[in-house]
Image (cartoon, rainbow, N blue to C red):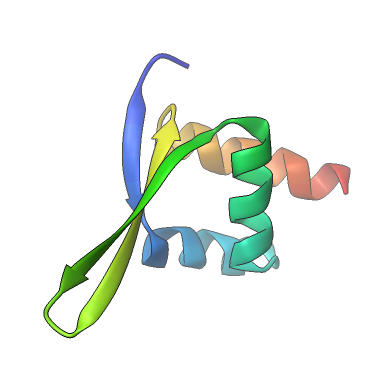
Length: 72
């Protein structure tokens, strides 16, 4: 994986829901595996938006997540 991509919390929440896992599980597993390299909280108006730097593309991350969920 040579690319890096930024994903918002809402995008990762969508994929966690579609996999039937909790977002925190997906984030923890991604951090432990080194696929989530960085996360940032950014204020947008009255809301805080969380963004995550993924080592690889979002598609590669989701494919990895599918395999990780199947393995557990």
